[in-house]
Length: 155
Image 1 (cartoon, rainbow, N blue to C red):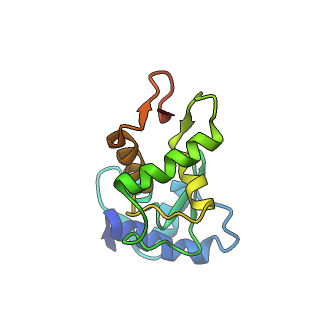
Image 2 (cartoon, rainbow, N blue to C red):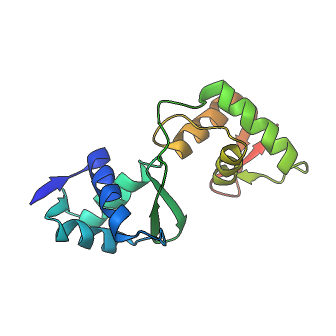
């Protein structure tokens, strides 16, 4: 049995999911672990489900997490070396936030990421959410909402 972790685990799971979930309806962590096992592969660690969840979450260029408990492989993985980060990303997010949230009620960073992608703006790195949150935090143009986890207010 071959054991994987981290990026290699997410990539191996992505390869397997393409044949296991051709309709891209989504797979649970348990289903992905079972699919890995059928091919003689496993997540390395004491808690394979936790190791796999972490690997999938850190590989957002390969995987989407559209709803609680389901993971969907990306048809066209993004190149994590391309896209915006830092001040350029914060500037693009700020323009979108002003348009979508004129009353400054706050926007969740995942909504901002979705709107950036819809606008044709790629986020650099395999962890798009982390890259965006860091850009928002360091920009001085956003403040994290004290009331809602993951929600940001533009200034």
